[in-house]
Amino acid sequence: MTSLPAPSTLPHASDEELTHVLDLLFEPSPPLRTITLPVLRSATFPSYDVLITAVNAQLNALAISSDPAHLNTLSEILCAHPRLGEKKVDSEQSRKEQAQLNTGGEAEAEKLAALNREYEEVFPGLRYVVFVNGRARPEVMHNMRERIDRADVRAERADAIQAMCDIARDRAAKLQNVDA
Image (tube, rainbow, N blue to C red; front, side, top):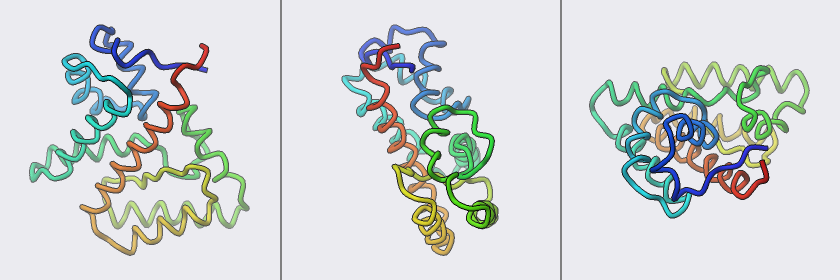
C-alpha cells in the first residue's frame, strides 16, 4: 500500500510527488492541482489535517464566488469523484470506500443509478459526493434523496466540499506511516 510523506516535506517535493499526494488524498483532478500546488509549495503544513483545511478554504472560496469560471473549476474538482455505485472506478481508495455499496441487489443498484441521474439533473455540473464511511447503500441513498429534495445548489456545493475533505482526512489517516 502507498504511504504519504511527512507533510512538512511537501514544500521541497517535486511537482510529481505533490501531484501524487493530492491524487491520493482527493481524486485525480487537474484543476485541484492547479489551485493547490502553489499553496503546497509556499507553506509548511504541520499535519495533513491542516493541509486539508487549507484546501477546504480554497474550495469554499470558489463556491461563494460569483465568477462562473470559479464555479466551473469547483464543479470540475467535485466531478473528479466517481458516481456512487459505478462499476468502473479508477481510484483504488474509492473502490475500497464504495465496496459495501456494491453488495446490494440489482434493484438497489438500478435505484442508485437513477438517483445519480436525478441528482445531476437537479444540480447540473455537480456530482453527488458523500463520505460513505462504512454506511450501507440504503442509508447513503436516503442522504442522496434528502439532498436532491432540498434542491439548494449552494448548500450542495458546501456539503460536497465537506464530504470531499472528510474523505481526504480519512485517507490521510489510513495512508500515514504505512509501510510501502
